Image (cartoon, rainbow, N blue to C red; front, side):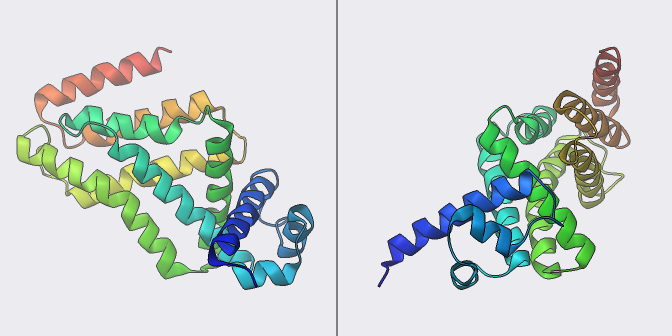
Length: 215
């Protein structure tokens, strides 16, 4: 009988293979049967240790959100704009092939599950986790006066996340390069913040937009 530790290790190996398989294809080609062949295990083992195709994709989404949260938490909280910029840089820093693989697989999974309406509550919860950090930073900016507060932190953070997710899908499906992905995310961040920025921050944002567009 397998120990809990052995089962956990086997589960992680299967998920690692699932990330690789999903990132290299798409949700249509991804299946428990294909994964079982690639991981050299039976389909029954996958169902017992993890679950069906949608559960596998949800697990990959959970892993990506946890990874983003760990990375963003490392960034200094003191300066509002720098913190939000750093969040973009962290989420678009995909030089590591393993991180790139995780992001691509998770975004395919997010997109597919959302289109199906599968695991709706869980996907909404993961989305709220991504929004929570941005909302906290934006509220701090409103309290400090750098942002006027005319637009709620909830609306601003959702606009930022929505723009990032759309651009992320363009990169995921290889419609744009990693450099263009980062540029678009930063431009969207600056434009959205400018709508609620105090005059000094507004001028800073306009300058940053001009520098990005000149590249």
